[in-house]
Amino acid sequence: MYENQSKYNYPDLSNKQVVIAGGTGAVGEGIVRAYLRSGAKVIVLTRSSGSGEKLKKLLVDEKNLSSLSIVIGDYSSFHGAMSLAQEIVSEHGKITDVITSIGSWWQGKTLWNVSQEEWDEYFVSYSTAQLAMVRAWIPKLPKTGTFQIVTGGSGVTPVPHSGIVSMEQSALLMMANVLEKETQENRRIFSYIFGYINTRDRAIKKPEWVSSEDVGYIASLASANESLGSGQHKLFNQSYFKEKVAEFTDSK
Ligand SMILES: NC(=O)c1ccc[n+]([C@@H]2O[C@H](COP(=O)([O-])OP(=O)(O)OC[C@H]3O[C@@H](n4cnc5c(N)ncnc54)[C@H](OP(=O)(O)O)[C@@H]3O)[C@@H](O)[C@H]2O)c1
Image 1: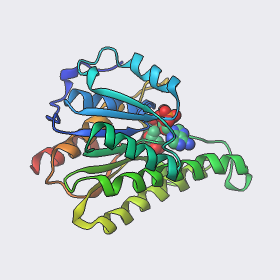
Image 2 (image 1 turned 135 degrees about the vertical axis):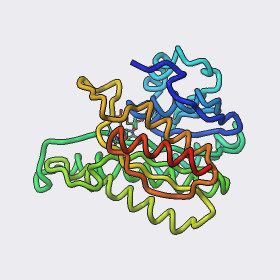
Image 3 (image 1 turned 90 degrees about the vertical axis):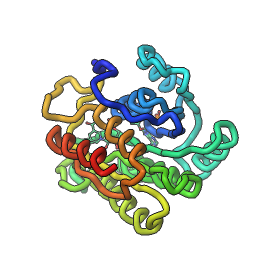
Image 4 (image 1 turned 180 degrees about the horizontal axis):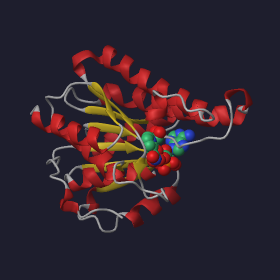
């Protein structure tokens, strides 16, 4: 399903080394591909060796595959993420960019019917993993580096029967806003609000939706264009995507 590598004019990121949490996921795959195609060194974090193996098989057609490292470990707790970050920096050196595409969709219950287990998984564990990544990586990033967070439209539009996902995505957007204020001009924080995304997991795909490759392309442009400052970006469909590509490339 992945387009020919020449579909986009990928930036040259051969001077970048990126960490991608959630890179094994359906959206994450497109992000990993984009950075490989841009010539970056790519480190994917995953909590399971099985997911890492599956990703490697999916990526066999990528030319720059030797630049991919898969690091297995628990990046979803404060302690786990910090230890992994220290190990990665001592083994691979300076990391320039971190992208998080963590979490999955959930639906089926009103808020007053949500179980403790569902809350712990879809709100607590996802948001804890995101903050764990912030704690572990923000202090280690260079001023020109990026911390990029992938979220969905449910964070700004309430979705009945998916309330805990809406709440968690909304919390992430606020986390990004706070980070932007706290880091001021000293880091580049990007948060993205996507609509439906055409991924490997979707039975129905629509041309007006962005694809996981588009997600990766936007992220790679943000890494490349160091004159872009922190910001929150709506990417609900292809027309938003095209405008954003122009904005991220024009302001160089
Ligand atoms: N799919 C869409 O149409 C769509 C649309 C808009 C926005 N989004 C956003 O894109 C992001 C990723 O979605 P996706 O469709 O790619 O989901 P996915 O295929 O289920 O992948 C989610 C990734 O998150 C990681 N993960 C899962 N549970 C976790 C936990 N408790 N703690 C830490 N990491 C965990 C997994 O990595 P490991 O298991 O390998 O560690 C996995 O790679 C989400 O934030 C979602 O809201 C998706």
